[in-house]
Image (cartoon, rainbow, N blue to C red):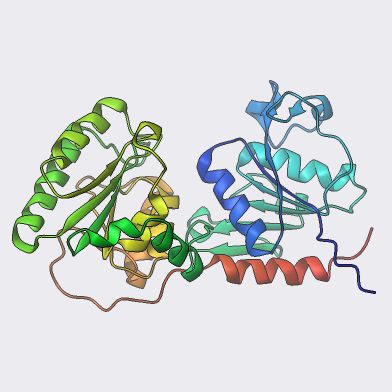
Length: 326
């Protein structure tokens, strides 16, 4: 009789929502039920991860403060710099039995891992590197259908329904009060000419004063505003599922990737030049037709959804299957 036991898998991150979401998305696309591991690293390993390995066995802790211990997983999927320390060490601690997959640029030689999955704008090279355009995510037809069913009430809102996904400032783009006032002016003008409603969500990175300002501004327009747990269940899946188009602030690779995975028109508003590698990511999305500038008025054909996770999962499965046994 064939063994139907699922391989064991750890989805490893530092607890940052975007990193954990990518690791989980890949694990689930592989059909696995992973252990979610949110690392706590002692210094100096936290600052020097993933380079400093000496003595790291006692420095790598789970979110409860317990050290990592066997049985080691069949597959380790890490996302982010700190997770990369665990991903590379699990290969050694398991005697090569753990297949180590690292998402995002690990900032060390990629040969420390079995596979590295990195967006093209990270410019990571190596024989064991798989490239994506954006971030891995769970958004596909089934995920959107589940969102429509769970949040069916959004279907009664006036169309066109515009999802507005709000992030926060980073080194590449500053999102301040002036930025949001300019964005609100454009959205209000579009509503005055087209009608419809807005499905607005802020993130953990949105400063509370700006979130309060946005809540007050959108109160004058039809739709739904979600600012956090006090507003009830997070309706993010429903927003993506029921929207006819999406407007996403330019700061987040994850939010832009998930919006583009819906197969709907996605717009961003970036009045200031975008800095760093984020600029290359925007350029790739614009060139492929997945992203448009909010002020663009010319019609453009809609490309297929930016659905990369399933394809990457199949490539990981193939490499894992042919990985030599220890």
